[in-house]
Image (cartoon, rainbow, N blue to C red; front, side):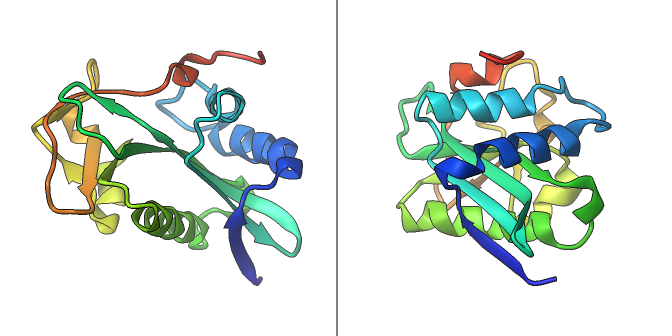
Length: 170
């Protein structure tokens, strides 16, 4: 199956919604609102990077990256997520391809770094690690990880865009 990673196009929104919904349908530790979050980020113009994975003309994965605010005022940091792969295409390297492409896109844009909330066992292989100086309130610190592109990790409380509170269609 040839895989293409490309930037989201306006006509991709419905397919991205469906892939995201399916990817998180049976996932533990989720509010099952990820598809609404992606839509809200798009609607608010907060998708710094939005990439799809396409196989044989069908979208089988998506990654969203949006700006985050750090209480110290450090600019240029972003949050990765949600990242989704269609259940029937999982464990085939698509998520890793999306991760690598998203990190390269951020570096190409001159971003300072990226944070995410997720499984340390998975995301550590991409260089993410807990940073004691970066805090996402009410989240166990081992699941909130960062990757600095310039070697400097800021300190402060991280805030995601209000779109992350989306709970349904808007």
